[in-house]
Image (cartoon, rainbow, N blue to C red; front, side, top):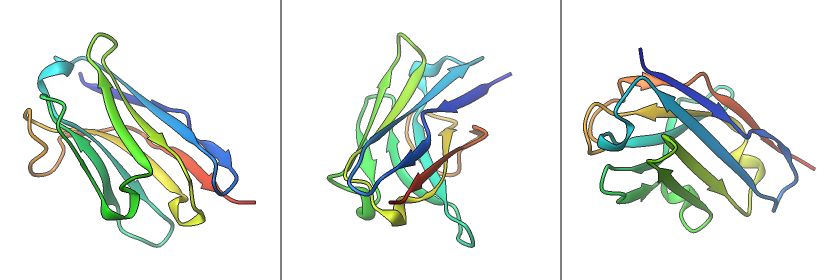
Length: 120
């Protein structure tokens, strides 16, 4: 059974930083693409960033230059470093696993989500 467990969310002031972590179990982590999504109140879930098995990355335009996705295959963990946070980054952030090494299509597993709130 695949499990994805996020951590690292919280309250931060505008301009601040947070690092989210997602620990995976029950899967050969290194061969799958991973991603981070977010969902703000009253909005649809949106893609934030992806990293494929070869560690190529892709970002939403809204977070380019501020967020960095990375993976550590020795720890079965994917990270999302978020800098220069803005109030509009406030959302529940979800970790996701794709069914192949490339971030195509819809993820097949999701984490439970972690709340990120950017407010003064």
